[in-house]
Structures are given as C-alpha cells and as structure tokens.
Image (cartoon, rainbow, N blue to C red; front, side, top):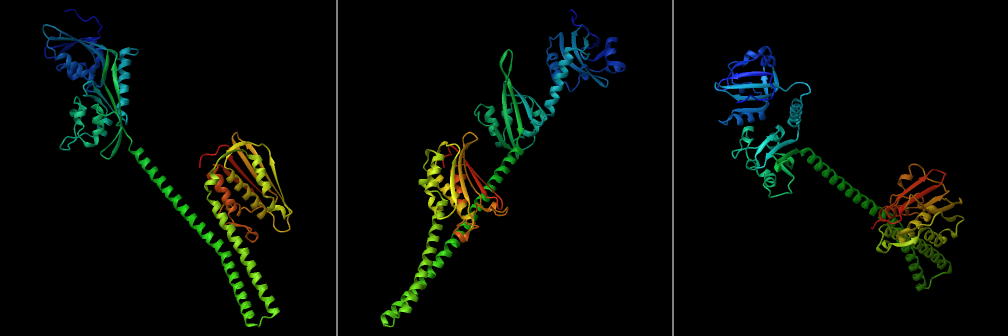
Length: 498
C-alpha cells in the first residue's frame, strides 16, 4: 500500500489495537520533552475531549473493518498543550503507522479555519440565546447550554433529562410538557403561527430557519430560543400603568364634572334665589294694595309706595332671571350640539369679519373700538357655528374683563395662515391685563375676575373646549398687568372629524 502523499512532521508506530509502541524525532519535535508519555497509551487517549466532532469522526472511520487508510483533522492533547493536527493512519502487517502533521503554524489555512470555527463555537456557547441544530430527520445534533437551560426538558416522571439523553434524539419526542405544545406543533408542521410560549414561569420566543447545503435543498433546521420574560413583564407593567392613568383621567373628569355641577348650582342658584325673593316681595306688596283697595281704605300715598316697591322687586327679579338664563345658555354651549359639528368650506377671514360686525351691539353703547385685520384669508373646511362661538366669546371676554369703568380701549382680532396648513386667529386688547397667578386659571369653568360686570366665567372655558376638542388646535394666552392680553388660536385647515 503506498504511503500517503501528504507531508508529515511526525510518525507513531501502533500495534493492532492502536496502542503507541514508538515514535520518531519528528513527533518528538511536535510533542516536546513529554513525548515519552505517549508510549503504551492508546491513540484515542491523545485526542482532545473538546474536539467532539473529530472524535466522533474517528470512531466512525475506525469502526469499518476494511479501513486501511484514515485521513482526518483532529486536535491532540500533547502534554500541557493542544495541537491541531492532520492525522493519517495506514494499516501495516504488524499494526498501524500514524503520520501527524502539525496544522498550528502561522499562516496555515486549516489552522485559521479551525481557529475561526472554535471562536464561533465559543460565541454560540456563551450566548444567552438558546441555539440548536436539528438534522433533516428532526434529531437534535448540536445545542448550546442556554438551549438546554431554557427548555429544561424532563421525563414523564418530571426527572430532568441529561445532555446525553438529548443529543441525537428527535426533539419533537422530548417536548412532552403541555407548555411546549406550540413548539411541538411548529416542529411537527402542524402550525406555522406559534412564536411564543410560557414554560416553567418564563416566556420564550422561538424561531426556526431551514439549513441548506450546496448539494442539498434541505439539510436541517436552525432553532433559537429567546427569554422574553422581562419584556413581557415590562409590557404588563406598562399596560397596568396605562390603565391606572386612564382611571386617574376618568376620576379627574368626574371631579371636574362635579366641580362644574357645583359651580352651575352656585352661579344659577344665587340669581334665582334673589329673583324668588324679589318676586315674593312684589307679590306681598300687590296683595296689600289689593286688600286696601277692597276695604275702601286705599290712600294715594300708600298706593304710590306699594307700587314703587313692587316695581323695584319686579325689576330685580327680571334682572336676576336674565342673568340665570345667560348662565344656562353658557352651560349649553360647553357641549357643542350637532348643529355646530357641520363642517363647511369657507373663507375664514371674511367669515370672522362678518361675525365681528354682527357683534356691534356689544360695543355700541361703549367707547371701546373692535376691529378685524385679515392678513391672509385662507379657505378652510371648518365648523362655522363653533368658529362664531369662539370669536363671540373672545370679543365678549375682552370687553368684559380688559376695561374697567372709566377706561377706554381697543380690541383687535386678526386672521392669518401660518406654518403651511395652520390657521391663526388672534385677539389682542390694550386693557389692564392679568397677573401671573390669574393667567393659568382663565380656562377654568366659572372663574371670573369681573363678576360685578356680568362675567360668568364660562367664556374662555368654552373657547378652550371648542379649539382643542372640535378644531384639534391649540390656544395660548399671554398677559401682564397694564400690558393687555393676547389670545392666539391655531388650528388646521381641515380639522379632524369630531
């Protein structure tokens, strides 16, 4: 039998049972000063236990009785170091000859490939993600410690399976826990949807990809497991926080509604109470007048006195009833009715000018001047009734709060188009302004600084609701004492559907 053509640096002489009987100087150079330790030892005792693939390959080749030549790459444990070698075995009449080529030299392609392979195996070994390779028949060929730990496979008696029990076994047959049904069905081809499962208190996300070799369409399956328990816990915590926030918002809305009802009751109750008292006084005086008339003792002086008191009481009742009616109207405007939700294409500047013109009675009896500046007149799909209500409340709010008795001022509204598709509606007055403590409260219901001048405290509250809820816009107010107040409303040219 011709000797192998590959070069060799060392040679071992083996008996028929592959026990080392001698070596040459080349092997001594590879093994170093501990070369004598190999004498009397079987060849497989020199194999590195870390090179399981090489050992399995050697066992497979040597098991064939007709094998006269064996050629493989394997790592040998020589003394305190491991050497990657090419091992060529040749059968002789008295045993075997083993030719050993050291592949660990610098620049050796085989060595570099083996190093890369070992590095990759180490990366996979250290990965927190469970990784396994299944053969074409579904048998478990390779896996890393994380895969073994995450699956935590057990027998029917709940006894943990060892690594030896896993390797080479069909993985589907090992997935007997009910919690692993999704993975079992997926590997068995009964389901392609399962991607997560809950197993032994942990949430696992799994994925599989087919492995193909150049000459094979399908060589096996790459399976990965990822522990997503912390992510699931974070999602549950976020959901709980969202639910808690929604509950807080709901309670705040209820509290605001309660405050609104209380404010309505107080604001309407006061004028109604005064009106009832005044009406009762007028009734008493008229009844006294009627009794004196029927008794024939009515005097002109008494008649004049009783009529004056009855008229004063009636006037007081009428004034307070009108105030109560105005409050009721304001409350109704807080919730925009269906007619105000009709959208219409219009020139916003032109429409605002028409609304302000219709409000001339508000300033007709006062020295104040109200004007409109149309800087640009954008055409937009808006809600006319809501826009009219906003303009009306801004003008009324300025005339009511900005100018105390004896002070004359100017209110200017403007319309412009800014930031592309944004419409700007502004209202500026040169009145007394507001303090830093008052400004943040102007959108609160029933908050008013001009209660004695007919302020209901609902004007800007209504405006804020219409702008933010219906027009999907923003409202900003700026003010300082004796420097007037400016309110700027911005909303898109096509507000979202309410």
